[in-house]
Amino acid sequence: MFNNEKKGFFDAFKPKTAFIIGLITGLLVLCTVGFFIFLSKEIKGGGLTVKTNNQPTANVNTGNNIVQPNTNAGQPINIAVTASDHILGNKNAPIKLIEYSDFECPFCIRAFPTVDQILKTYKNDVLFYYMHFPLTQIHPNAQKAAEASLCAADQGKFWEFHDKLFTLETAQ
Image 1 (tube, rainbow, N blue to C red):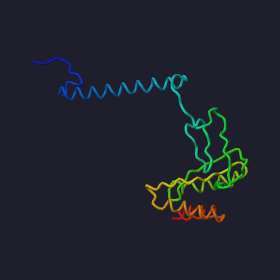
Image 2: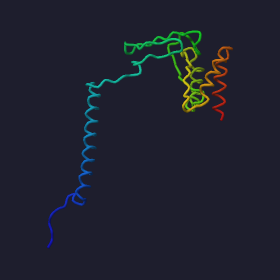
Image 3: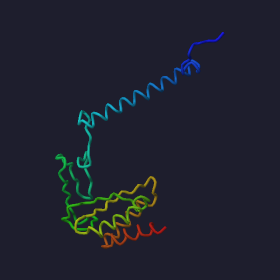
C-alpha cells in the first residue's frame, strides 16, 4: 500500500513544464561556464583583445583639426591648438582635457563645477578644450545655445557666456 519510490524534483511538474525548467537551467549553466572560460582567458592574457582608452579607434575631431589615431599604444596623442578653438589653460600643459558638451545637458551642467575646480587647482598642468556637441533630439535649445556661444566667441566673450549658461542652469 505504501509506495517507496522516491520522487525527483521534476516529477512534481507536468512534462512540458519540467522540460522548460530544465532547458532554462541548462542555458544558465552553459552561460556561466562560458563566462568563466572567457574570464580565465582574459586573466591569462589569452586570445581576447581589449581596446583601452589610449588606443583610439577613430579620428577625433578637435574643431578645425583632425587628430589621427595613435598606433603606438601608451603614447600621447598630440593635439594642435588653433586660434578658433575654445581653450583654457596652459597650451603646453601635459594634460589635455577635451569636453564634448551641450549647454542644455543636465550631466554637463553637473560636471561644470568639477571641471571649473580642476582648472582652478591645476591651471598650469591642464589645457581644457570645449567642443560643441548639441544633442538636438532631446535638447531643443542646445543648437541655438551653441550658435549663440559662437557669436559670443566672435566678440571675445565665449568663456563668459559659457560660465553664465552653466551657472544659470546649476542655480535652477
